[in-house]
Image (cartoon, rainbow, N blue to C red; front, side, top):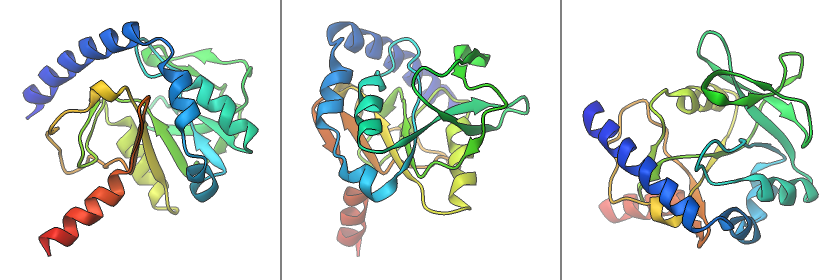
Amino acid sequence: MSEDKQALRDQMKALREELAARDPDAGEILADKFPLKLLERYGPTVAVYLPIGSEMDPRPLMDKLVKAGAKLALPCVLDDGSMIYRHYTRGDPLEKRAFGLLEPFHEVPEVQPTLILTPLLAFDRQGNRLGYGKGHYDRAIARLRQQGRVFICGLAFHGQEVDAIPAEQHDIPLDWVMTERGSIPLFMMRAMGAQEED
């Protein structure tokens, strides 16, 4: 399964680079379509990310969320490989860390986001997310969920959807995906699928 996933990662990374080059304004379009009801229901603390390479650019969405009252947080990978979130305000000084991530300095307070926006390489309609294989998001979300409800929204290009991603036991499914074409409420689709099986 790991070989299948790695082959899919390589394929989807190349595809995402094509999609990003073809549609440089996708982040703006996505922000315009993002439903603020998600912030109202699952905010106010929202985990965001600063894009690396061809990742969907969430910065226009960050501005929209802040205007609507959101408090932002950025992921920080610790020396032991675990990931936490620290408070972030646009324009804060950041340090360059592992994997090219820009992170708040360690003096910045840790926060517990309740709405997580995550980048991805691919997603399917079952809510499976293909990441980079390090497991940082899955472990961080599992820890956050021990302390309460967390809603996970993937940000992606529409073309990153695939039929099926090989899922492993530790993988945590997405609740929602937002693309430049609109919302995909995956948790509703899973609930409907479960009802059909009953």
